[in-house]
Image 1 (spheres, rainbow, N blue to C red):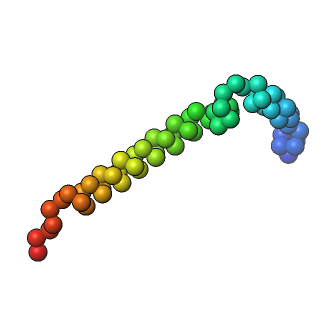
Image 2: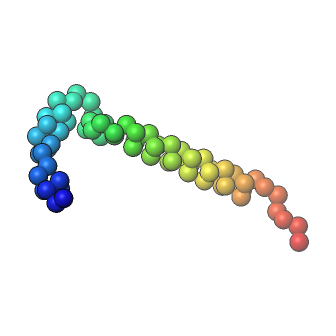
Image 3: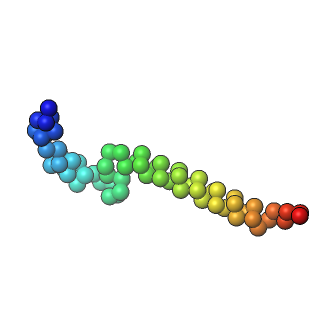
Length: 66
């Protein structure tokens, strides 16, 4: 059972060749980097829109009547 964890092929040289041969920017060279970056950009955009909307409500809403 432990041999499945110990006797694994070394994939580092093939991944290194793939990364070095890619002509694009460094942060988009790995296979799933577009997925991770787009998820980060979407989360950042939702957070920024929420923050701007909250600031808008604080600035332009009417004061509460007591």
